[in-house]
Length: 222
Image (cartoon, rainbow, N blue to C red; front, side, top):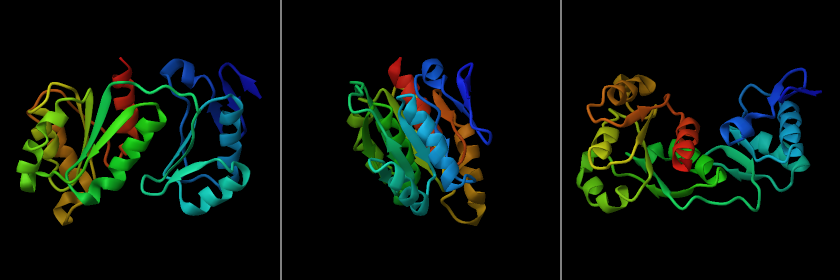
């Protein structure tokens, strides 16, 4: 039953009006949902002619969904499955996704794939952390071409401040749970980013690549 912009499936109320309000449909967060629940929600979103995006989905669930939706695409590194419109237009402005280390790439990929499905032009710049700050300085021209930059970093999370100090665009910082014991599963990086002395840094939750990608996509449309 559809009523007032949502469809009541009993176990879920699918927000079919979100695309009109926010410029992008409701996203399905896979953990905690059965494969059949994922199918039912996905089917409803597809029926409304909207883009389908499922985050944090595993290989088993993807295999199950592909039996019903054979055109479903899957990025295993980002853990994202999606079906996007063929005629979606891309923005001319570029979003740059940066990581401090190679271990941060899965979260960065979640952000980058989210942006691409939303219709953004995305470039990736990986493994330029502060342990070799010359790597950041060497790419300053690329950094300064971006409309928005997402910086994904674990350990102490200092890279976001350094990047923000070099550019004029907004920086979205993503702390990751990458690091040794005193990293406290991303808490140390989160606190560093929240306490950045460089203006123009916004911080999302630990390991929340999707949230960073979504926010960057909204900014890039303005």
